[in-house]
Length: 369
Image (cartoon, rainbow, N blue to C red; front, side, top):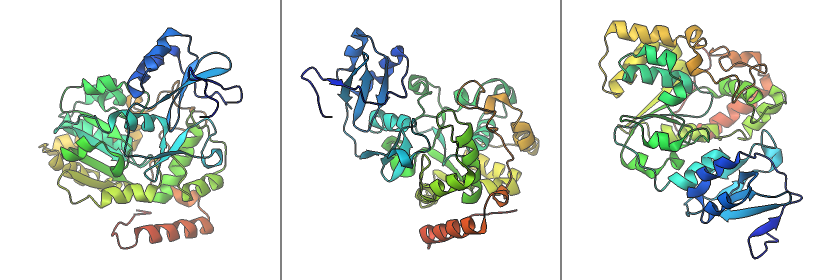
């Protein structure tokens, strides 16, 4: 960073001061960088995560820059503004994937030191592929159908999203075993201890046409992005692998290529829609849980779309991350909704890309049922 003075203070008059946070959050950043504890000794307006370190905003025209504490195998590159869904939403290219700043912070701090447990259970996915649905299913199977807790305890508490900035990672570390955890990280970015301890991983995918439609509506309602473009414009970004955690196809392939590992179960949204009870049994067997027909039917009823959409514990809160005036967290839950959005030209472009990337892999998608 050019223009540094000896005391590490830099003029930032022309820096766009975005993504500021409360002063007390500085304490959460202390493990990331050397000397950052000194920030508690002066007035801090906020911070920003960058690819190389932390920018701590101080007075009107100054900030301090603190390089990250630990080296990593990853190389991070900030995406240009015109490649992001929103100017204020920082995204970094890491190992070929577009990761949000909070995921970068997690990797910087936890990749080498993360302590997995052998009985951890991870639900992993690319966004908008049925993650919440699968989390609720796994929770009920694993908790012996504790529907009361499912209806009264927020899913993010029962099943934390480990790399998200809203997750208190100390709470994750202090959870009783076995822990149920969610991540959107690709296989190549998972903390090594998860791989080495062969923790159980349940991965879910969905056909890319419906994913594009669902992600578009989510980007419109998410306060961090507040996407204002048309679906046609979003589709071009999706095709170019711009949304966070993209590329979608490579995200799928990384887990598909590990599908024969005994600790990995690879599922699809469409298969669950076609035969929910059959897949409940598959998941239960994978988790070594024995349930009777009545229990499977209880899970099926609880997890039907018309019921899930009414459960406040599985939807994002109205006053936090989303603007529900823009869209609904639960929209239709259909297979084939893409027909209402895609033109023939869009289908041709996406199908050509799918064919090129997945050729020879054996991975196929179901587009209608």
